[in-house]
Image 1: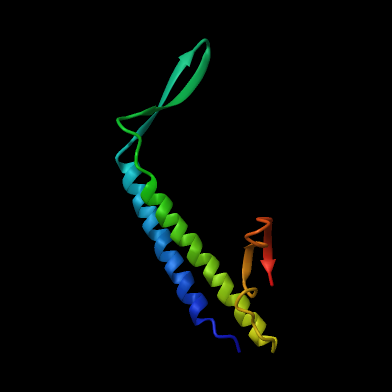
Image 2: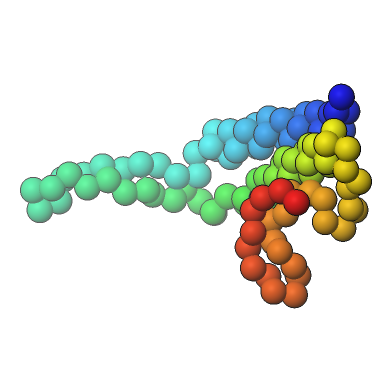
Length: 114
């Protein structure tokens, strides 16, 4: 039987980051950095975003989102590792995982298990 405790732990971390992301985004939106303004121009109704003050700092959102993605990816790696073990194979630390890139050298995108 597969031991998915580490995968679950990483997934829980990702969920926590998702909740933090939602809270941080909501805090930015509550400050109303933009308004949606509508008007009739040349017989057309036009809507535009109007900026109120400075552009909001989105760096905290980027950091939280990156951490969330990292934890989701790590949970997939743990699952792949356990799948190899369940199939009576020996995982390879350098190759067993959910790879987003084939190699650092080629930089070719590749999604999948190995």
